Structures are given as structure tokens and as C-alpha cells.
Amino acid sequence: MSNVTAAKRYAGALFQLGQEKSKLEVFEQELREIQQVFNSNIELMNFLEHPRVELEKKKEIVTNAMGTVSVEVKNTINILLDRHREAIIPEMANQFFHLYNEAEGIAEATVYSVRELTEEEKKSISEQFAKRVNKSTLRIHNVVDSSIIGGIKLKIGNRIYDGSVSGKLERMERELVSANKR
Image 1 (cartoon, helix red, strand yellow):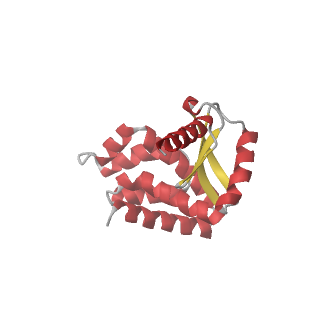
Image 2 (image 1 turned 60 degrees about the vertical axis):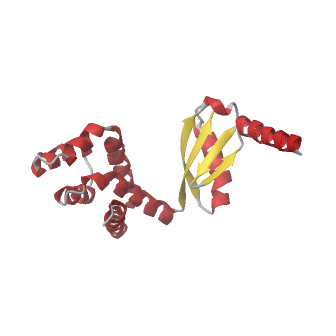
């Protein structure tokens, strides 16, 4: 079984449990924190995947790293450790986020801007573009990128909306080049 398939199964089981116990939002927040710990700490993954480290020691380290998370999330992580599936923990979290977002009508969006966006600007962008992708809201991740000169570039899934100055300049350049070739 591939890692993605296994991650989907565990995420699906945790999602179903969250629905039954009305804890989806809690699980989602806890998994975001756990994923951040795993993604920002390569040494943790190396430690967990090391064959000479005892299972109980792995569980102890992960429990300490997770802090105060719900019993259900903690048990899911422990099951993954028991089955030597620690490598899929970040992907399992991604799959859970996908299920959660679909259920809540949320789309993940990356907004590239020249400066950090205010909460008001993020809200306005969310309201404008959520309708275009048939979602109720967007979860916006702002990336500051001075190369876009001005405006914003928005990526939702595999769609890109480019309203940046650099994007407009590139389009103008392509038009001029193609006009000169005629």
C-alpha cells in the first residue's frame, strides 16, 4: 500500500471519528500544529524512522512534542508509530485537511504580495475569490514576494490568478514579441 493511500485511510478514519464526536475543528487545529512540528524538525523524523530506537521511546518523544492534544489524535499518531508508519504523519494531516476543507467549503489559497496583507485585505480577497471556486471561504497563506513589484498573485489549487505588476509586464512583453514576429 502506498504512503498516500495509507495516509488517506488514517485521515478518513480520524475524520469520521471527528464527525461522530463533533471535534472536527479541534482535530484540524491539533493536526496543523503537529504537522508544523514534523515539517520544521527534520531531526524528529530521522529519530522516529531510526530502526534502533525503541517504540516506547518514540511514543514518549512524540507525546512530549504534541503537548496537550486530544486522545483521539494522540491514539492515531501512536497507531501509526506502532505500525511503523511514522513517515506518513505529515501526509495524513494533509489528507485530513483536504477532507475538512471539503466538508466546510474551504479552499486553501496562497497569496503572493509585495508586503504582508492585513486581516481586512485577506478577508476581502477571500470574499472575492471564494465565489469563483465555488467555496464559502478561502484559508489564505500570505507569501511576501518583492519580485511581483505590486498587486497580488493568487494560487488556489492548480489555478493561478495573476494581478501582479510583474505578471502584467510579462504579458505585455509576450504580446510585443509575438507582434514583432508577424
